[in-house]
Length: 397
Image 1 (cartoon, helix red, strand yellow):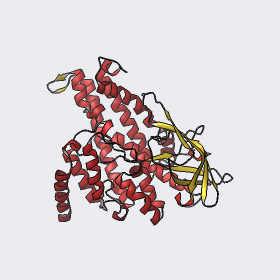
Image 2 (tube, one colour):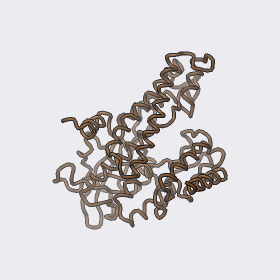
Image 3 (cartoon, rainbow, N blue to C red):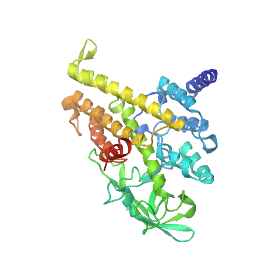
Image 4 (cartoon, rainbow, N blue to C red):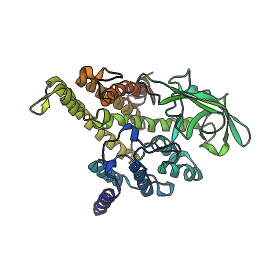
């Protein structure tokens, strides 16, 4: 315990000395740091903060030090999280490499591959995108048709992916490809990594109902991928794919496990008071007040459940299917948050563009629309409910 007390003191001192003041404020979307070759820093402090955190290995605090991480224990990581929250420190780096690819590489990649790919992820030098979903196959991921033909010292990749988040901004892609067309559909699949600047790759952004275009369709036309970029065994990529999906679903579920914040970092309760009014310091409408309190209680319960599950996972006793439960609940919780925001804002939440409405009001409307996709991406809610029914509750097909 004394070691943890000393560690807490060390973390607190380091943060106070090294975390810039502007990195202790709510983060706008424009200042989010995704890393990679195309990263620009609208706030110079963001670059400073990333460099300092990466030097300590605290962008990936529990990854081994030899792969660029911090080498922290579970208890130390909990202390680090607590101290971050105490000063309101922003994440130094948002990364699919950290949330999804990295954990899969730690489990399935060779030592040499870990040394090649993991430290750049920790330093924010590579921005990754995910090549899973394909046109015409929807939630049937194993029906993928993008093929990789063995050409001796490289694979020749042809096909396309869809809903590839930020493919037009990414440096590299982790991609499922079919390497044995004659094998059963859950076999004959392999897991490849390759550079998005490779000849033959093009991307086309897809505009969403929210007006944003974070998703793309990605096309592969005779793309050459070196054999050394195969992760795990040839034709055994489905095992990696399933494990990575668990990490993705846990990542998506986290959006429902954060505190009840509205657009641009506004507290849900404060938004309700602003638009509905106050009565003795409380939200004036008692029905809305009850719904907000219930949402906050559910947020807290979900946060503690995620924390407990994380601790169980580190001890090796966690149920792999919890990711489906958390993904389903977390996305529904996030959608409920935006419904409450719109209810609080009334007609001020119905704007799309033009004068008369604040940017944060317009932003909240678009975020509400974007939240609807939470129950689709990473596996639809229907898929998650099927997994829960079969794998957790043991119900018959």
